[in-house]
Image 1 (cartoon, rainbow, N blue to C red):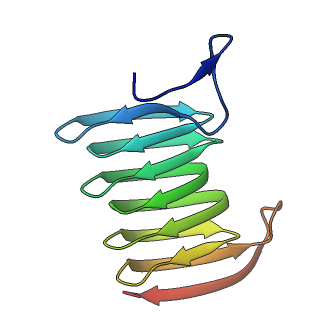
Image 2 (tube, helix red, strand yellow; image 1 turned 90 degrees about the horizontal axis):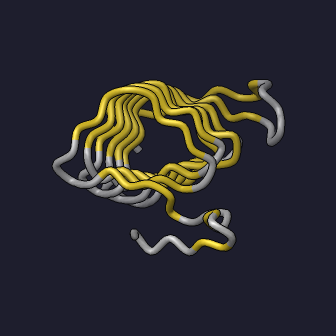
Length: 133
């Protein structure tokens, strides 16, 4: 299902392990270690070491802590990514972000505050305000 490849009953690192499709609305807490894609709506808390993919039309609202995030949909709230955040057109991030690596593609929007972290630490080294990049 969903193109998941498994060896010995476990998904390979980086494989898609979960999917919230268009037209779905889920509220609550979500935890995962690999990759989850959201094309529907999620409201609540995400705590993960893996990659969150918010597809075009997907909306995530709340407190998000992940290893990496790739966004072509919309995030509203606080986003903490230990490795990187990539916002691709027509993606939108509205709120506060903490990450050591931020990529904003042409046509993507970021409105809020970004705290650039040193890789591997939680120390804030720089604070940058963007308004609709």
